[in-house]
Amino acid sequence: MNPELVIAPIGSVETGPQPRTSFDEDGIKKLAESIEQTGLQQPLLCVRTKKGVRLIDGERRLRALKSLGRTEVQVLVLPDDLAEADRLARLMVSNLQRQDFNPIERAFGIRALMDEAKLTADAVSKLLGLSPATVSKALGLLRLPESLRAHVASGAIPPDIGYLLSGVEDEKEQQQLADEVLGNRLTREALTRKLKRVSRQREAQRGTRVTATLGPGKTVMFVGNELTLDTVIEWLEQLTSKARKAKTQGLTLRTFTSALHDQSKAGRKS
Image (cartoon, rainbow, N blue to C red; front, side, top):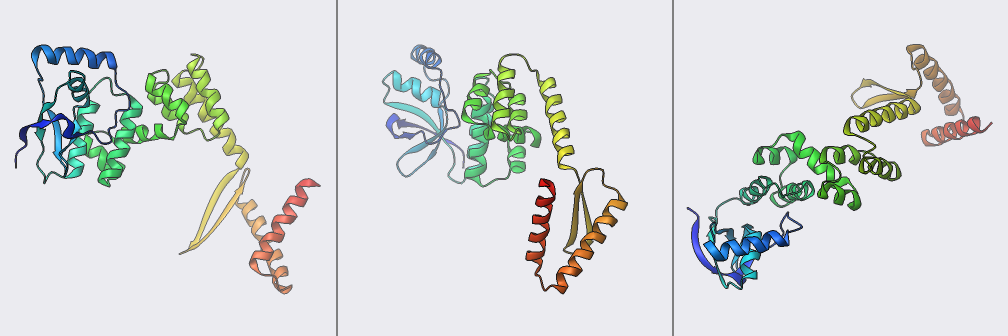
């Protein structure tokens, strides 16, 4: 079935949830003047609902028409058998091609497409013709607090820097880095180097992690600074000796590990 071009009452057009969160009122005013002079050049893209039609693409045109007091509008109705994912993809593709569609609106649009069409990030990347990395970075922006999302939306913080900031778990540190970016004291390259340096320092503080697999469902993890095979043997011998002693005392595994934890804390305090 092909799309159907119809004249619909403007009040019957449901806007529903749209990825776009802000509209340029001056731009809509100019669009209204253009429509009044030359007519509507492109119909609204919609799907049928029980009450009328739901807008898929063309909210700026709809707002301009309403400001002119129009009561009817040309609508291109998509076939009922068109999958919801395809409908939402059409909306996203058309918006992604617009320069005034900011990174946060794009991210919310991608998230809406995933949620409403029950798609994975990989499926969405294929549907929209984007790389998986692009989708992943866009979704990463949604982890930012609202105040930083606003800076990304306005362009004060570039989206690639916003994505790097989204990976900073400490809120105070995240805000401090963002302030440096906003003050032009920190470039993307400098931020990348700084985050890598902090990551290495924290990894050194946590110590090296080594996991030994002894068989199906049997793993042992060792965490410490400058681990060697001799260190692992020494620790295992100490653990085996203490475990055997605990067994003769009738201790359970939970009690034994709890006792080891308490002994470790006492050792650090002394």
